[in-house]
Amino acid sequence: MSEPLIDTAEAGSAEEAQRLTLEWVTELLEEPQARAEDNFLDLGGHSMLALQLSQRAKERFGVEYDIKILFEGSIAEAGTDVAARASRS
Picture (tube, rainbow, N blue to C red):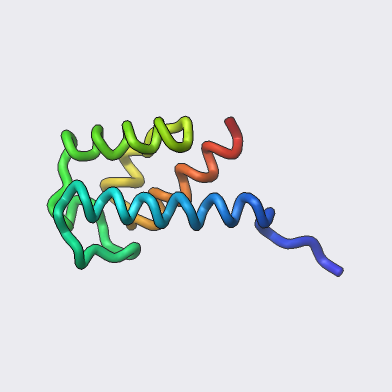
C-alpha cells in the first residue's frame, strides 16, 4: 500500500487555513460572494488589509501570509501556504 502524499493532519490544517482565509477575506473586504479561487487584489484587497489579514494568521497559525502568494495567487493558495509553513515551524 502506498503512503498518502499529504499527511492527514497537514491536509486538515490546510483545509482549516483555506476556510479561515476565505472567512477573513470575506469579512475584511465586506465581499460575501468571495470564493476560494478568487484573488485577494482582484476582490479589492490592498496592503493595509493584507497586514490585518496577516495579523490574524499570525495569531492563529503562528505565521503570516506570503504577500506575493496573497497578491498573485488565489485565496486558497494563500491558505495552503500558511498551513504548510506553520507545520514546518
